[in-house]
Length: 251
Length: 336
Image (cartoon, rainbow over all chains, first blue to last red; front, top):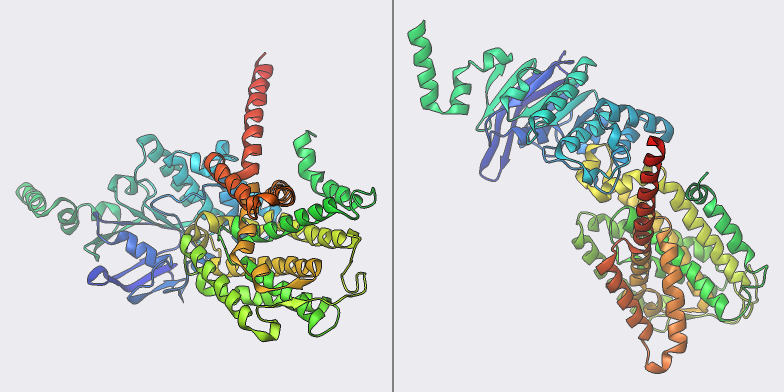
């Protein structure tokens, strides 16, 4: 088996609401996979199933061939699958370095080595100047990079990013994209949920598109943006039909 | 090395040496001052034990008088019923307290924030009633000590308080040293992470339930040691004296006044609160009982209003503003 992560026929139901319906896809080692879709498509729900925050109603999730479906989140983290949160969650009363230390203690038991590794992760995410500041006092852009630094400090085999660029200014988006590119260059596998297509297209090797809880497309970014179903999901039926006619008349 | 750095490194051992020397220079012996000093150390140790789970771990428990009481009953039972030395009772009581803490906390930890605190209130009531009607441990009458020979074997001294002083100093040193070590280790980081965000902590590989249970068990074990000391010091134990909301409140309030989740806070809280309580009780008692509690309550209200960080919060505030001025000075020196 070559996939590092396999999502197999996952469904997630909250009461009468089907948030995810029979979703399957694979993530190959060393690649960046983007999970996109319009608002309410079920991206975050699926993400939470993978990260062990929800137990899916049906289907399974395999990490390195091992079934991790419904495993508590701290054990998923210990398997090497680290996540960030869409709504940032700094450990407010702790400094930036202390935040990262919590993660570093998972990969390095000894305090000295944990500290050294935490400092390294802090630099990777451009947070040096905030080292001893309370993490609650930072801007949203810094907090988002702190999310990544902390997850990175756990020494993961794969990183799950939940809307890492949502709500950032254009400068902050650029910084964040730089960080993610750095991580990709180190060979880390990344699954990123994103609402904004522009942010994900230049980084992702593969895109999975969700709409109404179902997978409607999967492929390389260039193909996916031309997919009719994807355009319909994002821009509505009329626009898509217009696009199709436009294409038809030209060919 | 600047003074802050010196205190950080050597302040704690130096303080212990000074405290150990007090009886030698004659400050501790007989009399009221010795009694007050013993109670300061006892309350500091109790508050610090509570601080492990309540301060660092952020799980505000009003149930600690249960563990304190089990420790007290352990020692008293060994002396009064089994008629041995208190020591086996101390150990069994502390272990039982840790066990009870785990059994009781496991369901309560499913609750968060205020709901956890409320659940622990109920537990005090349950144990209070249980011990009130339980004849095996003396029921509502409690257990009264007979006259014992002075010395470490019985952990009893009738006039001279130096034995008790050293006894509580050992417990104090044990609790504070443990917390100092924990707060700088992985467990300390994990507990604070749980306090600041349990789901976040879990996403970073922290088994929050296991961590909280371990912290609660240790906290209860240490609280029980304090309880055993309390029974030995008062020569008796009964349910309202040790297993009551009043007693639980002491754990919480001393810590909050000093500075919750800080190493020095519990000691500072006890230094301020205990003498105030003991002296007001001694000198203002003609105004009716409970004057000490009125003063106690007033201080807490004022503190919460103006500095929720407690005495440590005030210290932090001043040292921060001092640091800021010195940093500014440093910049001007560098640029000139």
